[in-house]
Length: 250
Image 1: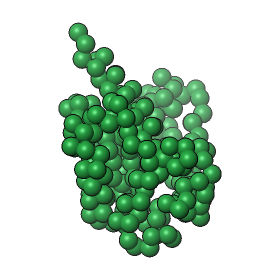
Image 2: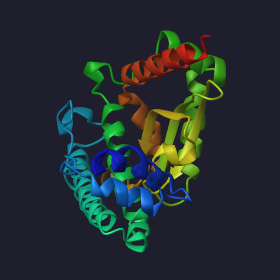
Image 3: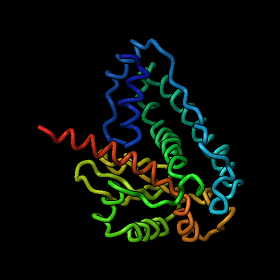
């Protein structure tokens, strides 16, 4: 197995979860000795809409800074940390490898979270804010009582989150229920549990709203629902729910 495959599928998953027992030095060294390909380089994803397309909910200035500066920084630093990890793995330097955990978790998480966030938004003229229908809509009614109740819960937990972080609507594939979760800093949802699938993530770092909403996070949370892309969340939900049902079949 090439070292890139090992790092992206197993070691990096362990790093992002911050597992207390990362993959063993012997296994890493063995994989490194068989490396045959270069490391994958992550890039900043394009947006499906213009920076100003979400106005007046989110200004074009915020979107441009958020995408080009903040997300790009996470991508740049993630690639840098992965290159350093590649070197430490090749040298079988366990101490240096462990020291990279926080940088990989923070920057890798920032890249993962923002890549989801951009897809969770859509201009009003392209369906942003339209309520979820069919399977996801029914699941929300079943698990929360109504879409309005879900929005209130997400807004309350997002507003109460101390410091910076994210608030999520997720599918728990183990319990087969929708849940609302929060993660600190740039921790990806996988750090809360391996069975949680992000359907919707809202960035509550100040860089996501401060230029427009100042320090009034509740106003930002109240308004962002006007540009939420429920169509994307529904597609993810239907795909994951189908896979769960297939796994349960004898």
